[in-house]
Length: 348
Ligand code: ADP
Ligand code: MG
Image (cartoon, rainbow, N blue to C red; front, side, top):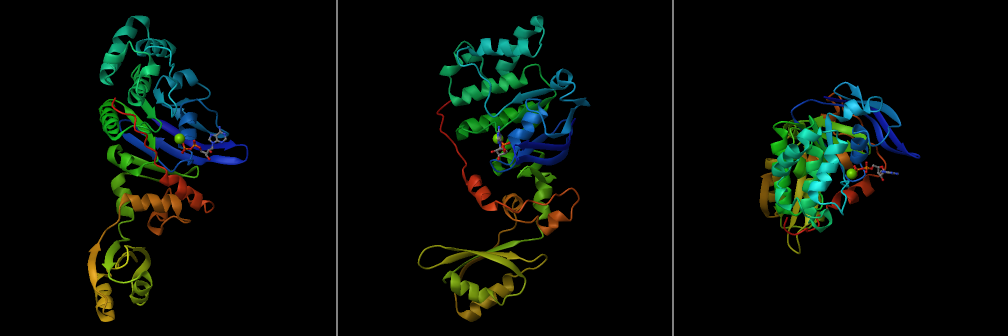
């Protein structure tokens, strides 16, 4: 188990990690989710003893990572954002070096390296130089290094950044396989990724923990606040006019589809169903409605609200453990979120 208590990290005056508190229980897959710059890597670097904290403590199975680093580090394998690979070594040489650093006994080393190479499917490239491997294979070598010694907890910082879709699927399968025997913590700025593999999501925004729950519960918490999607043959200003007098609407987002039609997302107030009154309002205005459907709430909405809006949604704020999201800088934040870089690294 990992306990993070009141963790703070300042870079000069910049508060990168802002009083984080959470626990990681054994045997599950945890996702650290947050936009770029949220503080995920900083938190992981502190949890794994690579970086000192400004304030606060981290305990790995009861061992303080700063005061008893050797004892604490035995329980963790870490794949940092930039894997510490030596380009001029072969895969096998590098893993032997990593095994030695981890203090794996000489007698066990060869067998264990072979086992890990088979697990992450790099046995066939073990005699190749790391610099000649594709991005996907290098990531696997980094994985192998983290898994060596079979530590109880495996921490992976953005494990699929820069991989192509096929490699991402393979890395996901590997994470699921690892999770059968290990506790896995991974970070990502891509919601779909954590939703796909994680049992529990910790949403981090501007260094703060803004949500911590199962993907299902996060969706359900905002579920009371539904969205109705309509497509109408009218301009945004006409649509605004029609909807102005319909009760039960929290807010609307309108997107013009071209000359003729606009799509509107109507956010209902809690517990309201506005579909009938929306239909009637458009009918009496003589504007054709081409689509009208409940589009529900998705985890995407929860994530966007938590990491971009100025306040924590009411439904979430009521629940214990939520911390208010900082107000400043939500615009630059949303820009960062858009930059989902995916280099195409070719086949593995
Ligand atoms: P994430 O991994 O979520 O993208 P990081 O932990 O890398 O976020 O960064 C959190 C914040 O701290 C960012 O604003 C980043 O610019 C800043 N930061 C990270 N590392 C350093 C550093 N070594 N010196 C100064 N600022 C840093
Ligand atoms: Mg990072």
